[in-house]
Image 1 (tube, rainbow, N blue to C red):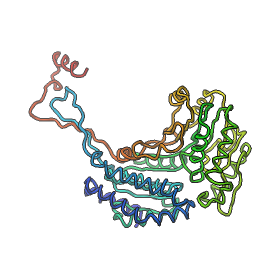
Image 2: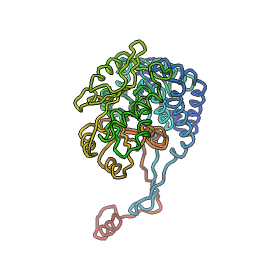
Image 3: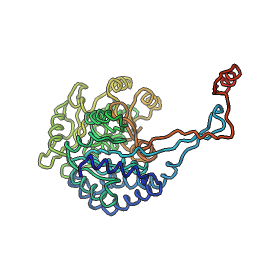
Image 4: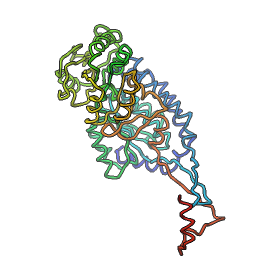
Length: 456
């Protein structure tokens, strides 16, 4: 079926009103949850083929998170979809005011390759929960996972409700030429700009989940053992191919050497003496990104790691020191297992450095100083983050996840997903038994006097 025809078919189905029934939406989410449980082995195998992800990591970061989000949404959807009463101003007496959420209509979800199952399905959960029809465009860089997503969706839903479009750039371009009612995109800043440009043709609202260089700040008061363990976990999970991975470290010069020692120790403890031989250590998605990362490793000096295997597309956890802000590794999001380390003497240096760059998707601060914590939260803008940990802020359905500025717009997870895929209508229901004449002409002094009272 042609993409244009597919979108038209979904629009016709949406207009029947079927997807607006809340019980029906809950049933759709339950059906999806059962299918994902049945397909868990196939999902594991697909992610092993695409990214060499272990079964444990796949459940922790992909399947398990999707199932958790489904359970949360199924439990709370009736409450989210219910109209919410709000107070009515005295000037509008006698009336009832309420906010009524409605679905946008036909939506497009474009997902990336780094977490190809989770980052496709979590937005889809929000779109279905809000009552939309959905076209899913998974990444062509993760073909095995895209095929499994397609099989699951075909088993659960008719194409007129939810469907998958596989393919590469040609299909992306064709989809972005269509008139959608909402577009949800996760990926790079450059493609995000293109999505927004295309959406502007029809004034289509968008949610952009992008990335950027997420700083990790370690001051002289930090618990260095805990910091090192959590930085190593967050940075080298999925070989650093995580949008919220710590991109670089800013460490106080007094504790730099000690932190580096601890990072080295925890890399060995978590990944072994030779991570490239660790069966649970993943791979770079393709040769293009592998070559890009090798180029970035020429910045500064290698303190640890540097080994790479072109045959398996793997790069060992690599820590760079003597890095300058002007080095290539500091000019783009790394998105790989390379960790540059810079030093500071005063926390104001870090604040100035981050302020003068694009707003990051995440920020991580390791400190035991409440003063430093207050300074960072007051002066720096970022999508979200952690104090004394990394990346776990996104692993909950009770807080929204999203960027700000160049790192994105809009957010999702839990209630935020429902809100992102809904339009909130503000409605006043006026009763007929009384009609205050104050608003009607002719205008009189006594009317103005009452108006001033009502509107204060």
